Image (cartoon, rainbow, N blue to C red; front, side):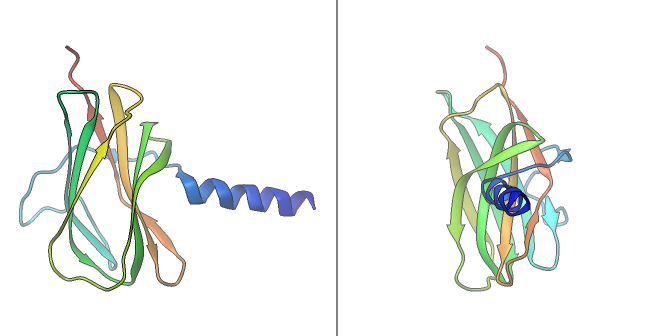
Length: 138
């Protein structure tokens, strides 16, 4: 019973939040650079910008999405603990540029970390690298 409870707790934690410790600088829109690329997903760029208020805009674009059922944008104060702030369900494969725009309305600190998590049709999932965003102090 104790093992079953531990397994259920682990599943619940991984479905809502994720750990990761590799982060990279923001990418610019270029044809030869990818923020992330594997057989199922190619993210051309991901860029975070501060709004005039306290919110942060996160824009990312995909060049293809194959066998993916869900894309989530994860956010956190540290690169080790990120939780979903945006989810989109995917119905079909795509081989065209798709742009996503997300507003983090409640960033917890001046340094935020963002990552894209995706779920495959077979139930597997994957993660991109982590984007570190430092808000300028005024």
